[in-house]
Structure formats: structure tokens, C-alpha cells
Amino acid sequence: MSLVRWEQRFRAPVSFLPEWSPWAPERIVYASNESGIWQLHAWDLATGTRRQVTDHAVGLLDGTPTLDGEGVLWFQDETGDESGRWLVQPFHGGKTQEFLEGVPHGWSEGLTQAPGIVAAGISNRDGFAVYVSLDGDPANELCRSAEPVGVGSEGGFLRGGLSTDGFLLCLGHAEHGDLIHPALRVVDPRTGVTVGEQLDQGMSVVAKCWSPVAGDQRLAFDHEREGDERPGLWNLSTGERHDLSISLEGAVFVQDWWPDGSALLLQNRLEGRDRLYRYELATGEVEPVAHDLGVIWKARVRPDGRTWFLHEQGHRQRLVFDDTGAELLTPEAIGPAGRPYESWHFENPHGQRVHGFFVTPADSGGPFPVMMFVHGGPTWLDLDRWQPEVQAYVDAGFAVGMVNYRGSIGYGREWRDTLIGNIGGPELEDVNAGLRDLVERGLADPARAVIAGYSWGGYVTLLELGKRPDLWICGMAGVPVGDYEDGYEELSPLLQAYDRALLGGHEPKDVPELMRDRNAINFVDDVRAPVLFVIGRNDSRCPYRQAMRYVEKLEERGHPHEVYVFPTGHGSFDVDERVRQAGTILDFLAHHVPGVVVPTS
Image (cartoon, rainbow, N blue to C red; front, side):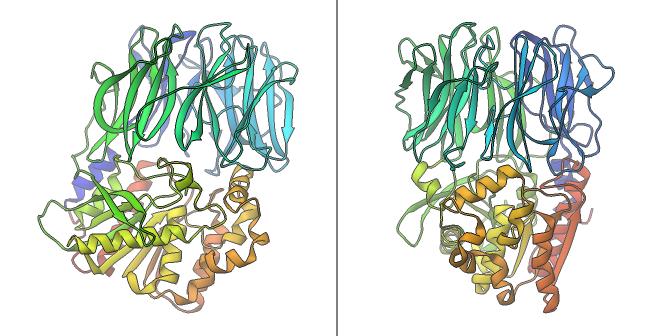
């Protein structure tokens, strides 16, 4: 493996999907790592000029133009713990200043704009609150709750918060105590009076985007009444809800409207790969939007009806396209292509069909050293997406297995909800069944099996090393949950609510029997394999202290381990830092796994 080759993949510039205001669509804002750290950039389509807006040491991924296109907005986090405040800078450059007076420091729960009004959600140790600013005045608190409440579930120019005319505001909330199955409430943003509610008990309802036509009070949303995600329309002028009938296998969710309100842009995700469709509201006709299979992170419809989307594949880096196939933000360099992802099915011990992906070296045959690379979340999934880190492991000689264990999203509500009240069990069963399947296929050498992952994947890694020490030659735990109980008090308020939902409505201390069997630190004395830890100093998702408590237990018994601490939070937006981390991991693997090659030049 060439050192230059794998570093080029990490360093190849990539961008997020550009964001624009419907009122000023020529003023574009996007995030890119072209400067070496993820920063915001402004792009004036009328003149073709581009400039870097932010130059922040931590970096940031999410920004949006102001409604009139005269400014660039972003949420600035000073340490990497993800808390901060909203800032604004003139679109063509100038002084940066605070955007919303009267909104306290905290964790962002979304920001949405409409004519004459801005609404923002903030959480902190005092709870969750939504603030509203009218005509540029200081913001006032509209509502407050001890349980999660916010104005949207995605970044950029939030279309699911304020209606196009600004007369209605949709709040996503978990005031019923279940963040995994959120509900919707639409209120008058000037008085806080409730206009309508949508709660599907034990199922998720997520606001996506209001009709772009002023005065049209239809809100597109995603629901789970059919098991898989499906789109719906809620007409607030009549109160009528209409769940759309879509005959597509897999999850289908809303991305955007066409500008005249006649059609919806839908995304279909089936086994970790995506397609886009136009859905005609008058006829129910579904028409595909042409593109290759892969992963679509976000898609939007321009005023001229063109669709822009962010697309990548396991062997090819992220790029921005339109529906004609034109590339919109051509990077200065394209990283070397990687090995393609193979879609993969196998059975777990309960006879259930599990899906995932595996990637193997270019050399034919096997068996190879194998890494079971476990995704985070747990309500997330492995996709056919570009991961330079995975490709670096493959270049080093590994077959890499990625399992969408029970608890993953994208395979229906029942599959995802298996972990509620039962964390740390089904994941191990499914990952280990995947390892057995790769061994049986002749792709994996069981004597050279590595377990690795970040966040929840780090939690699963530590549980595997403690509960199934016979399986693994070594492990890499990235930003892990090492002591589940100890970390709870340091989590952000939203993550605390997520933990309670995941534990069936309880805090960790209230489920002592489950914690005894599923808290990784309780099995630290059974770990036999060397472990590498990669830990963020200011992590508010998997806090530093609880991870280090696990490390200290290994130190007490003199067990071989290494610790790499980086200065920000749950991950780094700095490309150099990511390269350093990957190099550290590769060196560790080469030291402990026979046949793994360390890049030298």
C-alpha cells in the first residue's frame, strides 16, 4: 500500500450539498474541506465568484444563507462539544456578529426562517426551548420543555420549521417521553397556540418541508405506519392527513417539493443504496430521477425544476450533481478510486436475514485478515458510501465487514426497535454471525480477526473484547462508550433523552440488571486482546471521562493498550487530524495483525 495513495483519499476535497434560500436562490452556501478543515463557503451564481466564509479552528459542517441572501449563517462550536451560538456574516464579506440576541448558549435544536420571522431551538442544562425573533428584534422564548423540542431534524435551510409565509411553525418533540418515536406539533409562532398535533404512538413522525407556495398550508412529513418510512401530507388548513401510497420496496422519505407545489422529490433507500423519484401529487405517478446507485445524502429542487443532489459510492468520493448528470462543484483533485462494496446477506442465530456490505483487497482469493467495522448510532446504518478509512484498511490487506445489525435504521421500524430495552446483545449476535459467514465464504481468517468501530461501534467493540475475547486478535475503540452509567450525566440533553428512549424510558441507573450485563466496563477484566482507543477531549456524545475510566481499568491490570486523544469532540473536521488518526490505527494494526502492511512511502 502506498502512503501517498491512502493519504490522497483523505485529502481529496469534498463538499456538502449547497444550500440556498427560496427568496434568493442565486446566493449559495456550502461546506467544504478544501482548505484542510471543514469550513463554510459562499458562491454567487450570478457572478460565479466563490469565497471561504469561516476560518475556525474546530471547523464546521452546517451553514445556510439568510432568507434575503444578504448573509451567511452558521452555528459556531468553540471546543468541539457541539454547543455554541448562531453567527452571521455579510454574504460578500465583512464583520461577523451574533445572529439572534436573547438566545442563550447551548446545543442547537434547529433554526428556520420566513418573511419577518426567525425561530430557533436551543437545549442546555435547563431543558429545551424555542425562541422567536420578529422583524429582527431580540428573540423571545416561545415554549420550554424538560423533554426534547426543536424546530427541525436536519441542517441547512430548514424547510420543515416555519411555513413559507411564516404563519405556522412545526415543532418536532418527544414530550411523550420517546425520542426514538418523535411527534409533531404545529403552533402559531407569534402566540404559541397549538394548531395541530401528529402523534403515532410507538412510531416516528418527522417534518420534512412545507409547500413552497405562500398560503399553502400543506406539510410533507415521514411516518412509519407501514413499518418502513413512508411520505405523508398534512394540510393544516383542514387538519386532514394523507399518507401517500408508494409501491417501492424499502424506506421512502421526502426530500423536497417542486416549486409550484405539484410534486414531491422522494428518496428510496433499499439495503444501503438510494434512488430519487418525482411523485406527482395529482396522479400518484412515480418517475425516477436518473443517477447511478449509491448514497444520496441530500437532494433539493432548484427554482428551474432541476434537482441537485449529493452522491457517493463505496469506491468513489462524494460529488454534487444535478439530474442531467452535470457535476456542480468539481473538486480540485479526485482521490484514487477504492474497492467496490459488495452487498451481503447472511443469517443470525435466530434465523433472521441480516444485510451489510463487505470490501476485499484486489488480490483474488483469501482468506484475508478481517476487520468487523461496526457502525455507530445505534440508530444509523452502513451504506454504500465513500470511507477513506475503510479503503485504507483494505489496502493494508484486510477484508472489511460492515453489518447492519438489529437496531440499524433503513430496515423497518421493528428491526430498529429491537434494541429498545435490550442494548448490547443483538448487535454482538449479528456482528459475530457476519464474521462466521465471511469465514465460511473463505474470505476471512478467524485467527486474524479485528473488531473496530466509532461511538456505538466503539461500545460494541469493547463489549466484544470483554464478552467474546476468543474471537479477536485486537480491537480499535473510537470515541467509545466505555462506562455507560458513568457517562450519562455528561451527555448533551438531547443525548440523555435518546439514552432514556433506548433504555425503554429509563436512565441507566434505573436498569441495574441490564447494566450489569451490557455495560462494557463490567467485562474489562476479561479482555485478552490489545486495544487502541481514539478519544475526543470535548466529546458530549461519548464523554472523555467515562472512556478514560475504562482505560484506567486496563492500566490497573497492566493490559496492553494504546490511547490517542484528540483535542475536539465526537470527531474531527480537520483533515490532517484524520490522517494522523488513520496512521496511528494502521500502525497499531500492523504491529498486532500478521500480514498487515504499513505504508512506508
